[in-house]
Image 1 (tube, rainbow, N blue to C red):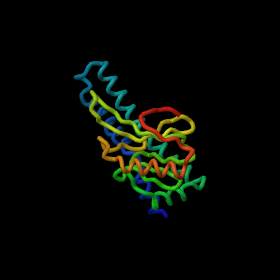
Image 2: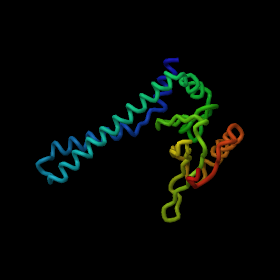
Image 3: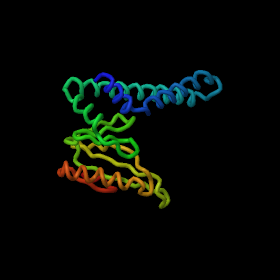
Image 4: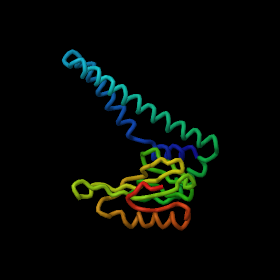
Length: 183
């Protein structure tokens, strides 16, 4: 079980936090090394930005680790690992659809279906040209959680149809839709 837990954490741990820490370290180092050549405003602003990115990244890592620890303490980790092992990988492996849990790839997203009131797809366009699709969940406490990005121009339609049909047949109380944050 310990190896499976490590594999699960590797799959789910948010990678953007490490990117934020890297950029934060870069900005902080840049400001320190080029401090005399920068204006005071740029020097202070760059330093605050760098430290802020580092602090935000560390905060997200600690939050993720605390979430995993709370799942272990209240016994939910067993069902999460079962869904991780037996769930269906969808959207090019970006999301695992389990019987009780949804697990995002490298996003830190772990949602229990009983906490969700609505799923919807959003199609984003710039100048009438589609440049992104996402699947979003709305939780009972009103939070919007982006589950994963989809292929553009409907190339993920079959998987989205499977996902929505799985939800509607197993969790009919959850509303399904497109392009809208209604709850």
